[in-house]
Length: 316
Length: 301
Image 1: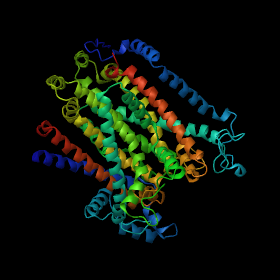
Image 2 (image 1 turned 135 degrees about the vertical axis):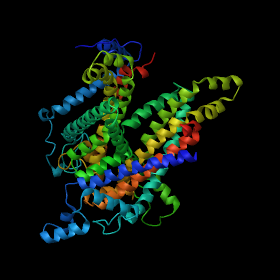
Image 3 (image 1 turned 90 degrees about the horizontal axis):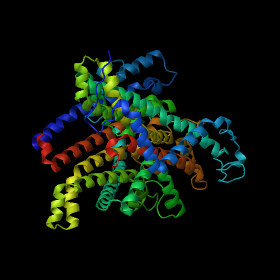
Image 4 (image 1 turned 30 degrees about the horizontal axis):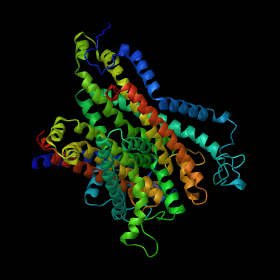
């Protein structure tokens, strides 16, 4: 296991290099000149040249990239042009809110998805199975931001059961109950599409496993059906399920941008959209970097989970 | 020089020269069994016609402002679906918005497919540096969450429909590359390809006659399901203000502006979202049915 871990960690290096190059290039691809944005159109040629030299923009691209990576490695993501504050502190502060939202959504979609998938697979073509098939088609077709607005109109504006937006109430709020009340609608909105995908895949993986010979043997031995399905079936169907949960984690991290915008959730997503509209590139870069890095870590965790679930993978 | 090798021994593969009839029979069978998909496909074509004919339909000018009649509810006389915050007719805006949303979905999926299939064929057929470059490129793009990368690219290119579409096509092509490469890799080792090569066929002949025909079904299935997904992402970017810019509207941006009036006039935001939902649902129903016809692995019986 230790050798597998070492090899898997080594594989991170090219991925991180690639991700950082893409993020760096995106900034330099942009048509706007940062010097122009910072100084405005009134500045003289000398002023511009001086600032360009100060920022290192007169250096060749590989040199600029190396400098940028050096800064990032030391935790210096630059200063936001718009808020005039260090980007890292700003992004990390917002990232906590994004983690709470995506974490809750992932927990919701994984537990509900696996439960639904197992239930459908143990009784194929039952009412529950057919309902969940139709529901998954709906889930894959529904724009999450629209679902969010529908839920908001229904449960917050018409029925008044839950708060419509934000993370805490402006007055008398701030405790855990307040947070949970604000979390329900965005988390359900974000999780909706993933639940159906995880349920579909769990169903398929379970049907495949339940058709194996050792399942028949277990039933013939007289093992209780519950144990057959859960211990003999689910345990061995976990690998594809873990894969899809990992993919969904990435989907949720990206999709959170839309959900956060609908519910004015103070996460990285809303910050990034504001940054794009304000043409604040260091801020956008910081947001993308932090979210992309956490996705790389999720993928690492998924790979380690595989090796733990299936010892054969470690020796390949 | 023409080389023709019988492609036998694998029931899964539909031999290229038999393909049209086999597919035709499967289509007819599915059509009988799956009336829903046929009806949906007809409905989709009707919507496409409506959107294409928008300039000649008896509709209001979608940008005609009438502030006296702002935020009228649906079923108002003269305005079947009501009006938006500037008194513009919602039905007209939905039909005109359909042109933008549907076209964006089809064009981005098409662009992603062309780039992705080309790279997938190259990466699967040629070993060595081409394969390495193609695979590293797709690995890196897939190391990002999908929507996040699209947003980041729009951030670099600048907001606007054209840039949003470019971003979505770039983010979408690795999906096709992976799919196509895996098929090409397995084909490369098959006997009929080796036989063709032994008979002296060049790369162009092998690719054109023995590899590409096998790719048609998986690509058609993937594409038909992808158009809906692309419509969703384009609408999402427009919803964030990164896609179409006012006064042009697609369904995503209509939803975004309607959101401000959701307390008193929820229909302004809910109708465009409903339109997206119904169209993507229809595309998925037809795509699933197409897969049943074209993908032998999921074909029942």
